[in-house]
Image (cartoon, rainbow, N blue to C red):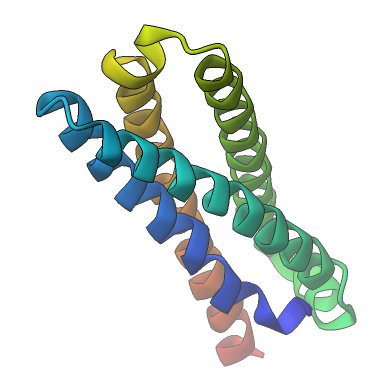
Length: 147
């Protein structure tokens, strides 16, 4: 499953970004179906983020990665892991908070700017985490080129 990490990470990234767009459209146009679509996408993002994090943790502990870590990409890996784990927790918390607000039928859960703002923050964080993952991949590639 560790080798699937580069494939799996793209699902939560895409889902979070598209959820933000649906949230933005839903609030700007008072379109309730778009808000519900954003919520559904965030649920899917949370589930796929958990899979991506699990596969990433397996990849980190693989023997090949341990050899590379010794050689100097530990800082890049640590930054990527830290942000990745942060994203997983944030998206899960946003989904849980949104679920609670929707079940309680709070008006601000479907018509306010709280969840679109949180979606934007998630989108920015997930892009940054993806950039860290790309930098990590480049560092690993550079290690193998040099050795």
